[in-house]
Length: 256
Image 1 (cartoon, rainbow, N blue to C red):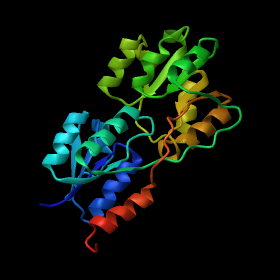
Image 2 (cartoon, helix red, strand yellow):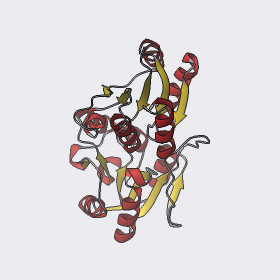
Image 3 (cartoon, helix red, strand yellow):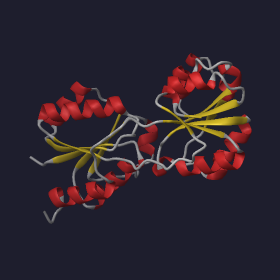
């Protein structure tokens, strides 16, 4: 039976690694949570099979065993803590090698205010008066709903998905306060969104170079926005994309 690698992607790193496996003709499965995650992958792939939709721990275990998965590469977003925890647990249950691809953190300016969580940032924001542009994703909206004047002061940039709009409306954010666009965003894109919303505060996660963090930092500096950053969960062990490519090639490549 053919051995397969399983890549959890939906990120720049996942796209790069699946493209590498395809180029090297290495059979693999690539999991993306959303339609947008599928869109950023090449349209036709012969060796990589794309799976769209979220999987819980038990679904992972069943799939790994059924498809003879021998290694899993976790290239999910740095803030997808629960997903990574489920992947790691499923790998342990199946006795499968687990490789975590880490994204380098972004050096932040001294003026940035860093908070350990969205609720902590929301508490601080309640004591401010400026309009706020959230670039933290739809999942974080409920935490920021506690901000004083939420429906009047807060604007959110999210993927143009029905689920995003529904999440915003559930949180109490009117549709007119939504910027529904797909990245990657340039410095000018970020400046335009800041100006359109009238924001004096930009809130973001440290999405790294791959997630357009340098462009956000420059836009905040040029517009004089106060930068609020949600600190990353700590990850001690992991590898780079380049190291993951080398492991894939050495273990599964034609010249192995």
